Length: 205
Image (cartoon, rainbow, N blue to C red; front, side, top):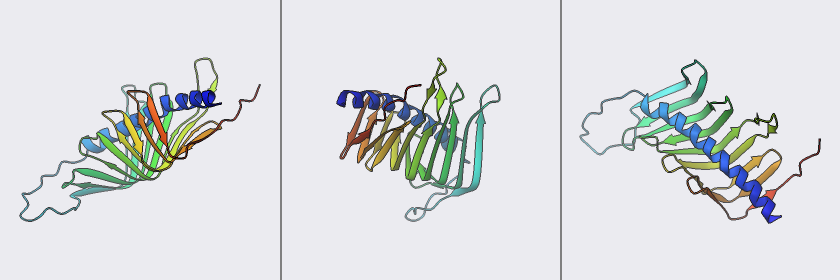
């Protein structure tokens, strides 16, 4: 049983965090590099945590060379804070398509990214969904879903961490843990605390 559980878990963690970090990287590419540059006057007193610009009810789309939609980032409001060089986005929705046209969607009540886009935090109702697909043999691959109240992605080092409860779902199989630390470069995932898994046998055609 443990061998089967480990095999299914390995299959989950091999792909889902990669899609997740790809979505986050796509989002931060626009959020960090194409937001307006505002000259900040030399402060005469202690710097306060106040935004220097904001965007409301925005949606930005990017396309590939053939005109196909690659990603869409939208939110209720985005605020930039010069003292910490961070960008906060409320009610963020990120939709990203890979080269095969497979959709990954990430949502959260708030997203926070640092100045160079190397770190992204999804806070409150974080949910990442890799839509169901068909493989090269025409067999359906179930959707993969990651949910939790907090997710911290380190894009450059390809790590995803959460100190709060998480849930991984692949089709009808489900795994839960109190916290997670995933290192994509090492292909190692640590599920800590009360780890549980439910495996549903595949039905015969």
